[in-house]
Image 1 (cartoon, helix red, strand yellow):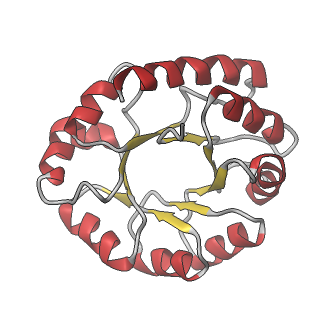
Image 2 (image 1 turned 45 degrees about the vertical axis):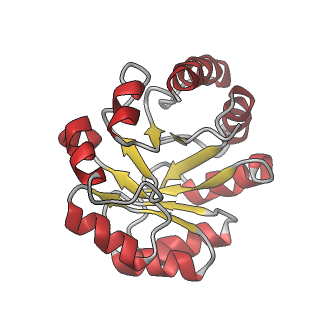
Image 3 (image 1 turned 180 degrees about the horizontal axis):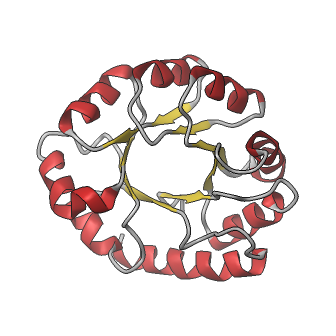
Length: 200
């Protein structure tokens, strides 16, 4: 079962990322991003691709430029997630055969991203729109376009978001924070997967 959960490993170190990625996969989370404002992120992405890339979708978050997309591509990453909607980044990502999930908040941004070729949308910060904001967007955005709720969505309210039209979730500190062991991440991941499975 492929769960629509993207693990956001902000602050992860290259030395620990393979073990943490393996713990996530074992728990049932097979989509992972290393935000580019983490320490040595490209090294971490390369290590994560090597450890998990055959069974997981691995890439980067906080991707803001075409140069960032190139660096992630060269490291073997296949997923590009951004906090904003920047058409050139989306177009370049697609040109390289990678998956693009730009950050959006308004209908204008949503349709701009879709027209640029985005594979799906990252509603961010989701807490600002709330499930009611997502429901309003879903009135005009096809259910075929995945929308991930990121920032303010978690195991306590998965059901509410899915009912409003969320396709999936990006989960950060509820899954991983700097200094956590692979065992800590495993326990959190299992609890999040369990909560997700109960409502989908």
